[in-house]
Image 1 (tube, rainbow over the protein chains, first blue to last red):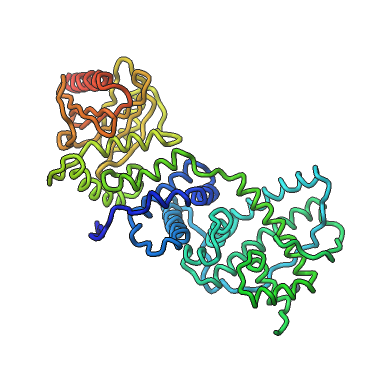
Image 2 (image 1 turned 60 degrees about the vertical axis):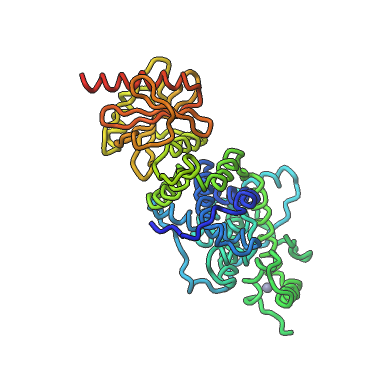
Length: 201
Length: 262
Ligand SMILES: [Zn+2]
């Protein structure tokens, strides 16, 4: 078994790893769906990270690098459990317009708003879990790992343009699951005046 | 600057909303959006999805303190122990090599490189930190024996002693060898019993030999006892006192030797 002869005992690992644990755990929790598996995945990620900590040249790149390790540990796990990840071929990663959505109405009654939010959260979670694995990873890394587009491109080992198109498709899928839900529930009936423009989230 | 068409602007909306576009492109998208109801509507849906995602972040648990400790310990102990919950044989072997090399330096500060009780102590600590430390829950030693027999290349005898209650069993690997793990509650404290097809004689790190040829040691603040019986090597690690552990070990050793020789 090869073990790098230049291996140094994890200098700086213990001091630096802690700040990334919450994003790593939140992402792992959403990927695996439960706490026990999430903890195992984070631990596996940290074991691998610790062993190759000296390969991390730039501490500023730690987040992207750690999530790259998380991704490979996760894909290894999927392979082992024969849950075949749905990977997107690179050639599909081009930017193109997505389906239209009906106009989003304003729901201002607080109790209705809360009910709607709860339903939306469930829809979003389900839609997220239905995404092809690489789109799901890109979105989860952005949302739960708090990664920038550049960090996601490092973590997924793909160009920035690919990150953009994956996140674009992922968001389009969430959007259409929400608008499908709203349509099914009869929430989307009226054409709202959208004159006030989009809310910049 | 040329105005963007809807088909050009729409795929950029997510990056625009996430503030990930360069200044020039961002400005172009903004100019388009200001005039385009279609894109404004898509952005409102995106904002709705983003709001859901933010609520989901808030509902997602952060790392537990146990995980925090385990993960920080990996760095602290990289030099002298084997992270014991490895599932990959290759990784376990790699870790075993570094672990064994390092263990020798820490424990014996000599050039000798021999297996050590440390791997068992570490496995004990990490297994107890798990939400579910056993794979098979049973208080019946015969049931545990049956469960292990169908999963291991050897048939371990499961200790039955006064004052201890079996919690369950799981399989693990130590030094890249299959090992049965049995969890007991002994004198009100957790006690891990590891059984392998290898003699525990090869292990270093013990400082005394007690009745029934039980060897005793202390590792990372945990008491460790080991003996051979019925072609198996037994190593027990306990959170209780040395005397309490010895009582379990000594009784088990005698009982297993008697049981199999009669
Ligand atoms: Zn437009």
